[in-house]
Image (cartoon, rainbow, N blue to C red; front, side, top):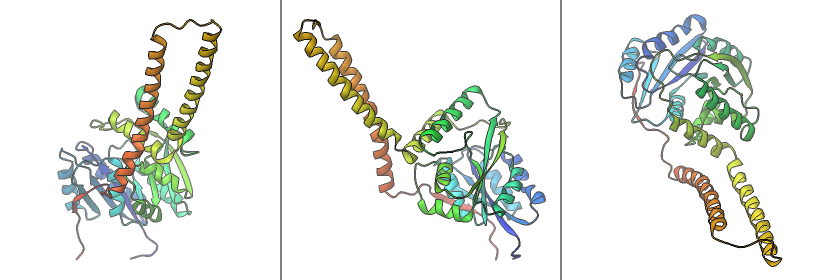
Length: 315
């Protein structure tokens, strides 16, 4: 092998991307023309798709030895699919990109250039999005809170289109953390970074499977995994509630003694009890999120299960 050549792996998580694959695969293959000094490897991870995604990927793999298809036994989520892809990627550097072509794969050319200068994490950050107002609102709020309370200086538009050095990929694999945000984990590692802003394009084909429940899970995973703020929030609320309750109790006692307050009915008591019980239930819910993740890690179950790998082996 030519020591001057770079092996560049591209990991693509796949979930119900039947309509995108016929366009995504050729566009990624065309990167060879802009990266002539790279040996490309494409690692597609089928995350339990129930459409023709796997069939189309296997057909493409039979025609191109650079393609590797990793089939998971069921849907484990995009973050687990990315972790699986990193485990099977063998490149000197590894790119991660979605299959829906909202991110321009041609930007990998500039990202490879930055990697060759010594940067180990190269992020394509979103300066804007061609998406609906509600999608922008959720994303912008999420990344604002993440930067404010969890990971300082986190890119305001977020990122999930990036290129990392093989050392970083090995670190992510070694950590093997479940219920995590892989992008935030890579950022948390703290390696030298560089950013390339771009406008994320509107999805042209297929329907996004990034549902509200998955967004909420990512939100919770990010804050539970990278911030002590939820616990600190509970402690603060507990102290303030106790303080206010004490002050209110003193006021009521003195008011009753001096005849300034007439004690009547149960309305005030019921309201206070309901309010305090509500706070307690919220706190128990937050504690439950932490306990569930501790339990999930302690059981030592894998983040994903590989059912089959399709690749052309060199004899």
